[in-house]
Structures are given as C-alpha cells and as structure tokens.
Image (cartoon, rainbow, N blue to C red):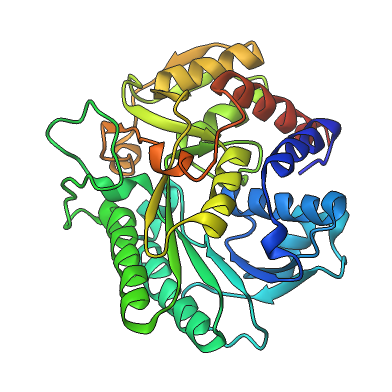
Length: 350
C-alpha cells in the first residue's frame, strides 16, 4: 500500500467518524490482517494511533512476518505493532492477553475455495474455536467474527435484500458450499460460546467488498476488474453480470466492523452493506471502466471458473441494523471505484 495523500485523506475521514476512546490503552488481535478487509482495519487503527493518540496495541497474526513488514512498511517497527505467528488450521498458545479479537483469516476468493475446500471450511470453524477458547482463557472483552452474506443461501423470492433473519437453501454436497457452510457453522459456534461459556461474541456479514487493499492473489470479480482497469486493460466479464450484489468500499467495511466491535449487541449478527451501492456485477464493472477510461468486454467462462462462482443470484443486504448503531457509508460506488483505480495505479507506478 502507498500511503499517499489520497489514502491519508480516506483514513482521516474514517477516523473522524469513529469513536475509539474505549479502546485507549487496550490491545487487539487481528487474524487475516494482510487481506482486503483485515489490512484496512489495521490501517485505520494505525492512523488513529498516529493522529488521535489512540494508544491501541495491535497484534497482527499471520503466517510470516515478511508479508506484514511489506504491507505495513512505513510503520513496521513501531512499538504498538506486534507480529504474532499464526496458522488458522493449527492450535494457538498466545502468551499475551488481547482485549479484543477480530477473526478475519479465511480463504476469501473463488480460486481458493475451488482449490482448498477443506481448508476453507476448517479455517472458519476450527480456527475460530481456537480463538474462542483463547478469549475464554484470557477473559477477553469481545471477539468479532467476520462471516459473509453467503450464509443466506438462495431463497425462492430473491428480489428483496436479505435482512439478518433471512435464510435460504445451500447445497451441502457441493464442495463450493465449503465457504457458506463454514461461515454458518462458525456463527452458531459464536452464539454457543456466548450462551454456554459467557464469551462475548459479535458477528458481521459483509456483502461484496472492494478496494485498493486487495491482495495480488484475490480472484474475486471486483478485484480482477479493478486490477485490469488500473493497468490500462479492458475489463473482461465471464457472465452477463446480472447478479445483484451489495457492494461496499473497503474503508467503509472496516469502519463498520470497528463500529460493531464496540457497539454491537452480544451474539448478534450485522449485515455490512452500503444502501446506495446495491448494483449488478455489470454495473460495478462499468463503474470501474468509467473511472479508468477502459471498456467492458464479455467472454465465456471455463467450467472450472463456473464451479467457483457464488451460487446466489441476489446477495443484496439490508443495512438498517448496522445503521442503527450510528454507522453510515462515506464512499459512493463512483467514489469508491475512482479511489480504487487511483490508489492501485500508485502501487503499479511504485
């Protein structure tokens, strides 16, 4: 990430809206902290420490220190940043106490689901269980689990956005169900730990998130569109793009997660959706194309690509429950697309 004036402005906007005063002097552990969502959360917390004297200790859990030192290079070595070796498929035995935990570690894009369905499911279920047990032992204040809009499955009348109590069909014997099934089981595990062990849990269900904090390996359609457009290529779509999605810019998603962490009700789930960015995949592609000055083209998807696709024709989400906590999206689809393209181009130039 290039911490340019444009990105600093973005972080200023988010930190100006968030009240992180209750986290002052506290510690937070974040898994999946180099991913699209996790790294955006870390950037906000680092910025809060720098400009608002937030005094938050940030524990970054990842496989290797190298990936983190590269991602957060300008701030690596700061006393408030701590690297923690972590593998979501293995037991944890941390020697420190984290007041707050955010579990964002999981395969989160179609190519990974198709290649590693077992690991995708286990990182969400057994990986979360390890963190819940740690939170219980350490008497942590709260653990937040990042779920997904895919928990809703498919319902017969799918033209309306999903609210938090809407659930439809998931084909359990389709290996692609490793992702929604793992997320569903993990959510129940959160509720169970709260009920049986009094571990304070809270859940968020992001819709489709995009932004410049994507990794280079991210195979989600929005990430592919943005990378190609930023590189001066035309955007290639492998379907008609009629599926309806709730899109949300990465910085907005990160601010929503921190809002729920601090204000959400225990053992409750909250959709993350920008009510003004519920559009089709094709409309998203067109927004990136307009920002980058390129075209949208269409090709036939391979069988392997089709097997990895989201099974939901409509995964739009309501945002009323989240907004009741005082959250509101700051970046429109057009503004989010523009920022994504400009910030990715800065990285390409580097």
